[in-house]
Length: 168
Image (cartoon, rainbow, N blue to C red; front, side, top):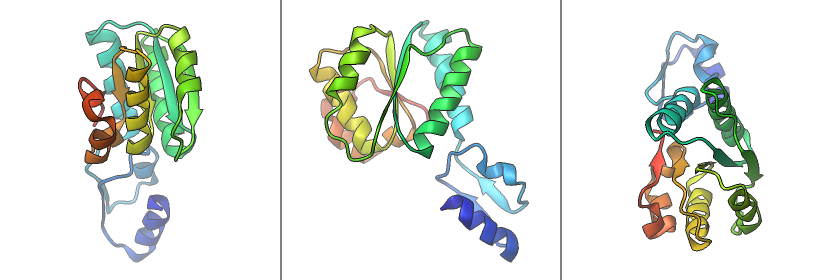
């Protein structure tokens, strides 16, 4: 929707203040009256990757992501940042919005013994995933995207939200 809106704004010469679209290509349109007040996926991912690998000194990260543009773009940026920092991802698995049971993918991830898990998706699914991880005994650090910074995520994750680190 945001990309359609900026095309209309371009023709109408209406200023747009972007507060939600984190797609790095959004501002590459070079529309002079388009402004962004939220970091993009590239910046968010690079910040998370540096924190994971250089501050926490973790080695192996598994990713579980939403199978849509938001999950694909954000994870792509994290994957590339990880590779540049010398840490290719252990695995990257997908889910769709509305899913409630992630146990099959979490079992797979658990068997690979990653140092951390990154989840890139909407608040509801991210909350369900961290809750199921903890119920399965997975105590790895949980890293999330900007959509985990929400009341909805906290409500679903409950006490499992304790210690979650998110790029925002």
